Amino acid sequence: MSQVAVRASAWFILTSSTSVSTQLEQAYTEDTGEKLSHNQFLKMVTEFVFLLVHVSDREAIETLGPRDSARFIVLLVADLNRLGTQLPMTDEHPVPAFVKDSSGITVVGLNIDLLNARQHEYVSYPLFAAENAPLRGTLFWEFGRHVEAVFRDCPMVRVLAQPLASGLAVNLTELLLKQFKTFLCEDPLFRDQRL
Image: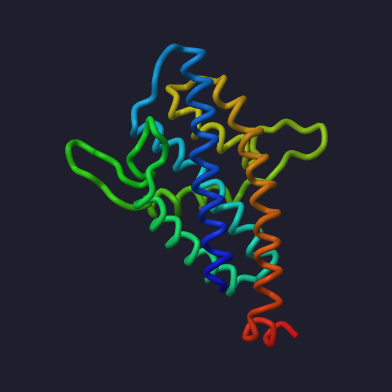
């Protein structure tokens, strides 16, 4: 798997998750007058990262097949972990995304157990609702519940988070398809096995 493809995907996931989380934090602050703590902001960024890793996994399985998609996801999560422990998030939240202070102890790294739990949960939901069907029970509805919990059960945040997440998923899928196409054409081992 091309490191360029993995890094581009990891960069997109982390920066987009941070950007959208910043938008939601601003909307929340305007609505309630409250600011989020660093750990709350971190939880929100992490929920977006988990969702986008899941979307990446779905697209990779469909495009690359089970074996190569597993290789892609392992590399993607490793690169996300590297970026998320080194790069600051925002001016207001200058600590890297996957560095958390918990009771005076600094925890560094992506929470793999929670990522696996979200993967296990999300796999059972359809990506989108059927035409004229309610959103409840779709991937983006369930994702919205997790984001809403970060904001102390503020329903306005769920309403804003769902379309933002859906838009990110579409943009990520377009990026992944370009990356996978390059991979399919350039990796001789993969190409020989598929032909």
